[in-house]
Image 1 (spheres, helix red, strand yellow):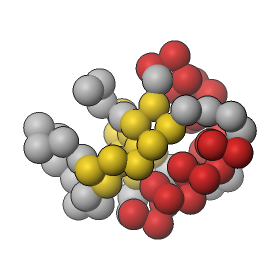
Image 2 (cartoon, helix red, strand yellow):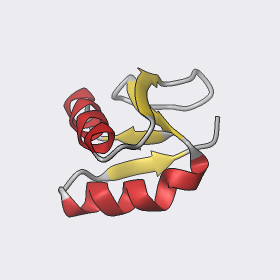
Image 3 (cartoon, helix red, strand yellow):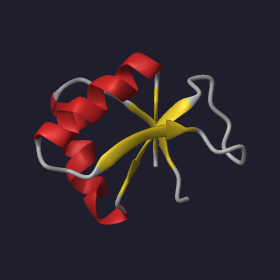
Image 4 (cartoon, one colour):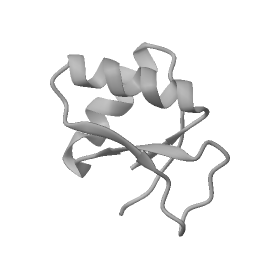
Amino acid sequence: MALLGSPLAVMRAERLLREQGLAVKAIPVPREVSSDCGICLRFLPADEGRIRELLGQHGVGIVGVHEL
């Protein structure tokens, strides 16, 4: 899962990545992980490189990546 800077960034990333055919979903941040945003982006671990690449190209920064 990826933590982004704001709920708006998560929603933007979710839309962008789905348009590229990636399986992503906005979910509440698990209690074990601290986040000011409150929501994060769940994705398949195998897609992490592509997700980082696409979000970087569109100026969406990732705050952190954690395994669920």
